[in-house]
Length: 375
Image (tube, rainbow, N blue to C red; front, side, top):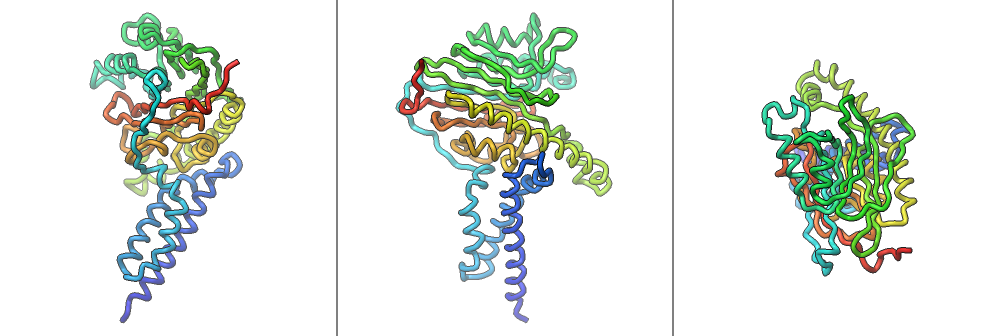
């Protein structure tokens, strides 16, 4: 019996299925989850469709010596190459004629409240001090810190003083919470350049997550607007994901809760990113947006930002660029920037393991040809 026709029919069916899946996944990246929440789940599955299409390409080439059968999955890879580079990329550092004085180095880092809680440093009591020292002494001109914590007068946790004043940096803190002891929680931007304006992007909804911004005056006399964001959390524990995939009982008990939390996050972030983009589009300065997106590169949130700004990893990253320091291989921390900035280097510092996020360090230069004229 000739099994080739059977194989061909099966692969044809799977190719049609993966094509439909890919088109749906990409299409749902443009659908606001607050309008149609299932779109968030479909968009999230896009990497599965990309992987399936790649496997089918290899199977077509392997099972038949006539490569014409592989043309369709190869065409899909070509047409949706931008989807692939959101997850895996190869780039080289850009050579620039800009002097060191013209270059701007940015560090974006979710510092996890500098591990102040005992359960975060119980196994390593020196962890908070090492993390604070590393952040304070980092040479970047601008630091964007998420899950920021400051405790005035404390030897370890007086971060306004240690990261700011002692290092010659100006600071703007967006406080999400001040506890009974006066300690501050929220977002912070530290800058060695003068801060000439600062503020918060209002989401018009009760939330501890927020976006803050500063306008800094560069040595060139141009102004750069820097946003620091921490959008609605996924609020999912790794142990719940593990329980959901290990057994049917776990899937029933934990899976439903995970889905509910994902749905709420999709909806909240779709509102937040629209508010953020409205604010960004009103800026007359070049824009740099850093922070914890709490969403995947195949999401509506990411797609909306990518439609208006370039992404640091896609422009200059290497490898998978995972930014979550845990068992889940995901990239949720990002830097986006406007056309008026040129990216020279982008690095995920995955050797720095103080928190459940890896820092992102990038170097930019403001193109002289597109620099704004200041009044």
